[in-house]
Length: 69
Image: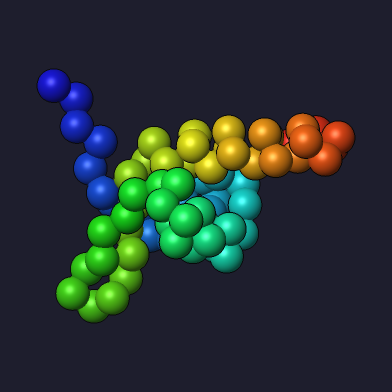
């Protein structure tokens, strides 16, 4: 069983997905991606969440008629 651990912070995930940290926070608040909170309050995400973010961005921009680069 291959488990994808929670290991990326908001900024790291944003860089991996090619978006800004506000987008990551927004998608987490909308429950589009799963996050965990450390005792210090920092959110951590799974590495696979970057793929989900890219897919959502592609779909949103396709509706607007613009390609996601």
